[in-house]
Image (cartoon, rainbow, N blue to C red; front, side, top):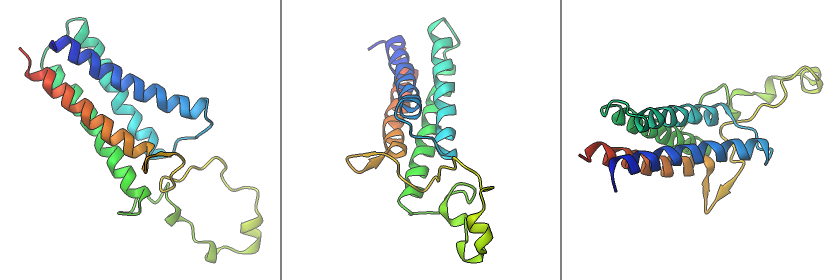
Length: 154
């Protein structure tokens, strides 16, 4: 495969993952948590980098595409680890931040609580034992390898 083909493949891969995430959100009704949103930004960057490269951008920019794919892969693996309770996640979006025992009856019945909060340590969808975050980690690692292969092509 040529360098341009590899760049196009990696760019389409990130675009597919990003479109899939939006599809799960807007068609499937699965709201993203904070960490899910973090995983989208590097894909957007990889798409932009790929488009710039396909119209003649500087070759060293390929490494930025690899870095973007690797970054979203790492975030995905970190998020999957939080879901599996292997390590703690951010207290702002995990179940560990709420102490029901310290709340009074009026607090528990209050209608002023935030709505639409999606916890980062809860799996809302999985396939073959991997959550969306886990699949993003695996597939994005493959995309990072494609970017690196493109960088090595002459």
